[in-house]
Length: 382
Image 1 (tube, rainbow, N blue to C red):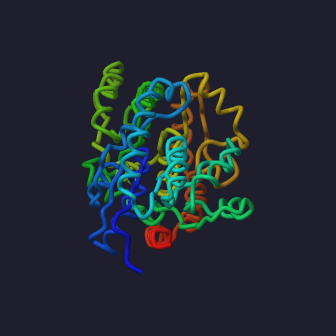
Image 2 (image 1 turned 30 degrees about the horizontal axis):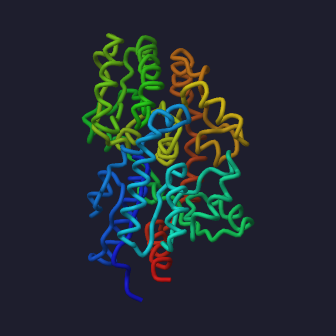
Image 3 (image 1 turned 120 degrees about the horizontal axis):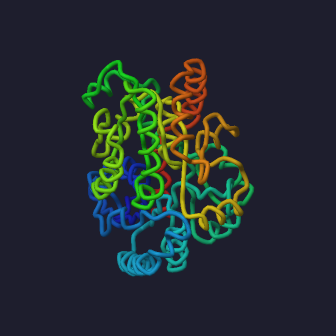
């Protein structure tokens, strides 16, 4: 059967842009005439995507934070519903962002447009009731974690495990020396990668705490260096302002425009905001301290809806606390600095973590872009 004339995508944040980009490139490789449009980021655009809106328009997390942006998000979803309905793509693909995408997908599917969703909402961790919305919203779910298949089979929802795109992108054996050379970093200095998130609200709530933790680490170990990837240029003023509050960080801090993978590959330990970046750190076999802070009301709601004690993807996959998580009131500069320095000084523990993370890498490594493209085109051609 012939390939579809057009496909519509909505990716909700920087991680969705990264996950979708390889799939778009594979679809374009198979049929260069494909028209791919919707909401995407720089990587998707580089793969030939027509971005009606940039992913940063959807980069909001939590409950209290969303309320502030709700009128704008509702207008955006209404506009996308109209534009995608007018386009009549052979299939719509939502990439993650379930709070935004599932509602849009329900309406599109009701209008006769086939729907594929990539990256299941975390129904195995919290808000289990969303499985019924998934049932209404999607024709096929593309799963990125192997343990999700049994849940979808039990629910009777068509789903395909495609592996995680990052597991194919990231080398099984990282090369720290090469990454340090690419970033212009000293080959033998102890380096901490600091990843405070990709959204403005994350930088406001967590970035300042991370920078304060960096200052404490620098005071304790003056030879320590830091590398901090700035996920979006709009975040740079917030990060610069936080750094100015700590004069001891005037040297020894390298800011990069993106390039988070180089930073993770180059470092010894990672201080990271909960999210996809925790999985990236694990795939680079790097020990990490996971943290998150948000408004108290958002955190209270999320805790009440949760089923498992972990928030970090490496801990969820391992089903145990293999790396520390310091959340909310526990995420103080003192505690974060101490946890990172503990890892830096524990070679045996770091070796054990690298072994666990290598096992995870093999479990997630599939021909993800090929399997995802197969599934999307199969739905498009039904």
